[in-house]
Amino acid sequence: MVGRSNLQEWVKADAYRRNYKNAHYSTVADIKTDAYKIRIGDGRLSKIIWIEGNKIFPAPWIDLNNLKKNDSIIIRRFGDFEPHHAVILQDVQHEQNWALVRYNGYDKSDVAAYDYIFNSIESAFYFSIVPGNILYYDKMNWVMLIALKDSSHVVVRTANFPPQDMEVPLKKLQILK
Amino acid sequence: MRKIILFSALLLVGISFLQSCKFEGNSTENNDAIIYLDALMPSPLPPEFIKNIGDRIAIVAYNGKLAIYCQI
Image 1 (cartoon, rainbow over the protein chains, first blue to last red):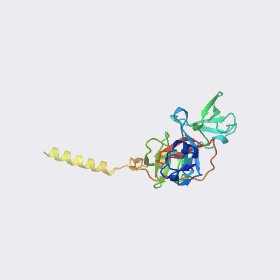
Image 2 (image 1 turned 30 degrees about the vertical axis):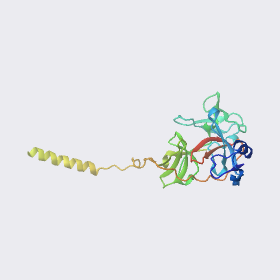
Image 3 (image 1 turned 120 degrees about the horizontal axis):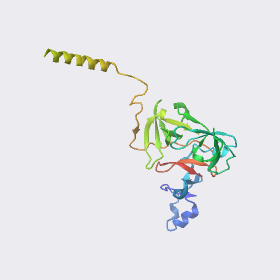
Image 4 (image 1 turned 60 degrees about the vertical axis):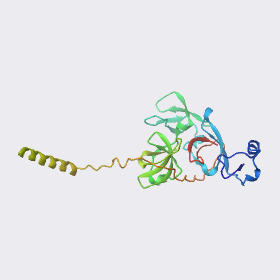
C-alpha cells in the first residue's frame, strides 16, 4: 500500500498506479503497512476504503463470533423501550452477521442482526470508561467518548454527518458489549 | 389606600417566602444541560486490539467522522 500525507483514503499500490498513472511516483513519500481495507455500512450504500490502524476502534458487537449455542444474550433494538433477554440457538459462524435466537418466554426462534446483540448493558461511570469507547447515548444513539470532563460530564462525538462533539451528562451513557 | 398598602405588604411577604423555599434536588436543569461544541476535539487513540478479517469495528475517519457499522 502506498500513501501521501494528504491522502484521504488508503489505496493499493496497483490501484494507485492504474488510477493515477499520470502522477509522478516521486510524490509517494512513504509505504504504510498498518492499513486495513474496511467496508462501511451494508447494502447498496456501503463503501470500501483503506484506513490506518490508528483510526480503528473496537465496536460494541466485536465479540459476536464468540457466541455459542445456549449463551444468554440481550437484544437491544433501536426504538425498544427496554432490552429483551434471549438465548442463542446455534453457534455463530465467522463473518455471520446475524444469530438465531429464542426470546425468553417464547417458543419460536427468530433471527437477530449482529448490531442488536449484546452480552451486557451497564450504566457508564467515570472510572469504567476511557476515550475511544463506543457508548449508547440517551438510550437512542451511538457515540464515541472523546474526553472525560469531570465526574458528571463527558464530551462525546455523534455518529451523524457532519460529526459533532457535545458535552453531555455521564448518566445518559450506557456501556453495551 | 390602607387596603392597597396592606395588600402590597402581604404580596412582598409572600414573594419573599416563596424565594426562601428554593428546592434543591439531584435533578436540575443545569445538571442535564447538553452543550454542543463549535469544533471537533482531537480524536482519541484507539486501544491496542487484535484485528481479524471479518471483524466488525468502528472508525474515526480523517475528517473526524465516526462510523460505527464497519467491517474489516
